[in-house]
Image 1: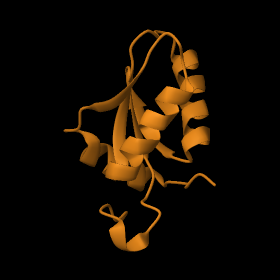
Image 2 (image 1 turned 90 degrees about the horizontal axis):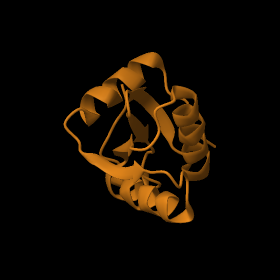
Image 3 (image 1 turned 45 degrees about the vertical axis):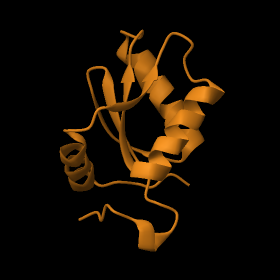
Image 4 (image 1 turned 120 degrees about the vertical axis):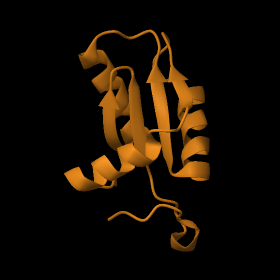
Length: 102
């Protein structure tokens, strides 16, 4: 089940992600098993990550790819600006969570 975020929570997460560098890059091959594994590892470590689309110019294609990534990783999309998207998934152990949503 993908977590549902309110508008205020998405804005808060985008603010936290502002200084982050992309943890993964979505290239011409699209969503591969290796890419999903890389995103899973990053989310397990940080809860909040950026991913960058490098070979995709069309917003509809990026949105479809992002939906696929979100579904496979069970992560919520906090936003997408240009070629960069922000994903959030709280740590599976509540005591290890670093980000507490407003």
